[in-house]
Amino acid sequence: MSDSGREITNLIYTYAELLDGGDLDGVAGLFEHGRICGVQDGPPETVFEGSARVRQMYEMATRIYDDGTPKTKHHTSNVQLHIDEAAGTARSTSYYCVTQATPDLPLQVIVTGHYKDTFHRVNGAWWFDSRIMFVDQIGDVSQHLKF
Image 1 (tube, rainbow, N blue to C red):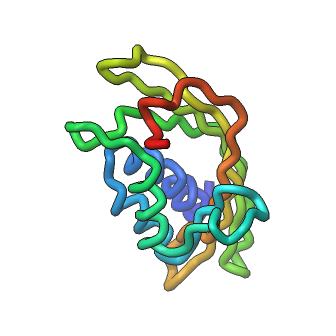
Image 2 (cartoon, rainbow, N blue to C red):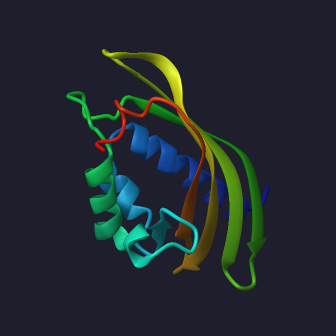
């Protein structure tokens, strides 16, 4: 795997690690030069651009417990990565599976889906350009989401 491939793959996995650790500022920071789109080609209110808006989205949606975490594990797999080194851009697709266990919810899969991501290089470092989140299967997210 190329250095760029490793850096981008690590970026994808870092997102999951930070989110599961409850580090919403860290997650938001990954999108300093990018955006999260809740719906592909959706209306403006489903696009959260820049760190502040991404942080706001997670604060609004994600239940954080007394230990500072959402008590989830985001498992990311099937990463397919396509890099254009000359242009400093890349795109990927990947699967996600989120498990959760809380005092009121036994360990279980709460949601699965896939991501479509784009990336761009800024000052020699790779950043998310966009992340579109698709929900493919949904279980009991009542202990994970605030709505």
